[in-house]
Image (tube, rainbow, N blue to C red; front, side):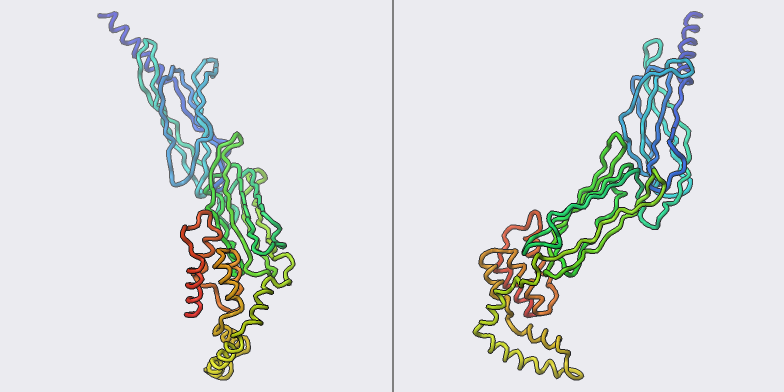
Length: 386
């Protein structure tokens, strides 16, 4: 009986000693980050145990984002002369707001082997830490990184495009020490003089030896509506350089657009056809008669430009034949070009139906069953109603 009591006491004493000789800590590399700046945490456990199973859940919070950046590391090391089992987990934490942010407490559930070969469980808890987060030093969406690279690639020289040539622009941003959703939103490149189709963006976070790398890729297909020189406006993306501790700017430079040899009159053949059109005189006479009422409508005469625009909207136009030829041949690029020149000749904005043709030209997977002749008939009806 006495022997049993002694053995039971020894087992209990051993368990208490094992459970008490453990430590879990939250270590961090610096304590005054700005909003969105990566803080590397190390969750370190020092256990005088033979651990067989473990479970640790890093706490979520509305105050920060986080990602584990390496596999858990289990190894043995001497601490104060004692050989202990060491556990380390590396976490990258990104504050969402400024002020005091608490991280933890964190609990580590352990199943370990006792001296008698039996398994037992214990939970070790790390005390919470507090980070003093500073406001982001710019009045822009916060983006912090130790290094940021912006690459702007063009498939051709934008100032010397050939007729019907489509320019592909591909922009890639990579930021070391950031998450994908920290990167800026896709910029709006739309301009009244530009036909534009945007490919779906690619956005991801890749784990590397240097830490998490955020990457976003934007791609557009661009084509000027006319050959007149124009400039696509610049864009700027401010970001906080965590190495030199100052705000930098990643620029998208302006792009000059234009056709090579602009002024040679791409639509010369259409203009010749218009001049030789047998019905031109009849149509012009009817148009002028109808325009008299417009000129006398309201208070006085209309400006010359307005008269010319209204007169042209009564006529078939010099580009009708080119549109029909392109539709009959199924040449969508030529059809789009002729339709665009027809709209400019009429002084009329692009109707919504033009987007159907653009989708066929620029979409990576255009809808099947597009009928160019049927589209042209609907396009012409839309213009007559307008």
